[in-house]
Image (tube, rainbow, N blue to C red):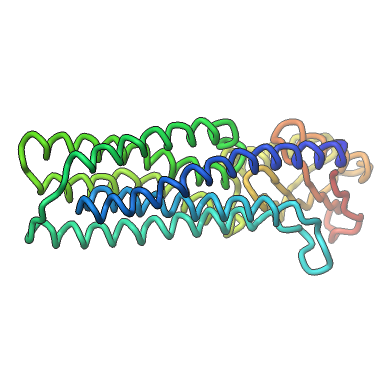
Length: 304
């Protein structure tokens, strides 16, 4: 069995490191957001405003991510028996929805500009975008180590990553306008940024929705888990098998197993719990046993 206290300490350590990195990324992004909004209006660039819109969602993502870490560390209580870990998932889902809304706004504004082109000051547009590129690269480096361990940090990382691509697009658009005078390049870049971001946003929304629907976590196949449990000595049948997660790294499982003649319930439960932990990294399992032709009668074992 895992040492629960040690696991909790490790999680707190990881959350603290993520909070520090998120705080630095938030400070950088917030300062640049103000500069980009001012630059977008001053230089009349929809591409800059599109990038600023995504930068605004970056700021929202980072603020919510920090709040999610703070709430996620609160212990379980009589009303929230699983604690507050799911706040992280809600935060990531909100960020994805916000990005979709911004993309729709940029698309509508771009269509208007195609029919009514407006002059753009390309030099200022390029300078602001270049500064944004540097900010995004620094923020990405800060968030890179935590993105695979937390949906929350991954959501923030994806938005910063998308903004980096956006900054490159704005720079390219500014160069094109500077040498050709084609102001319609500006709304095209704005739309391109939105289309580049949306597939990644959809993936994040899909994954967070799966968690909210208590779906089987990515990387785990229910049939393989069922077959593995059925292969444990003393088990003749498995039913009412449920696997879900409260967040991306906190997987839970419940199962009812039917025992063969003469099988010892406590011994079978211990074997099943150990199997789930070692083979599938399911750290929280409740296994209930029943004799042949009987309803569940033995108590469940919770791990850890």
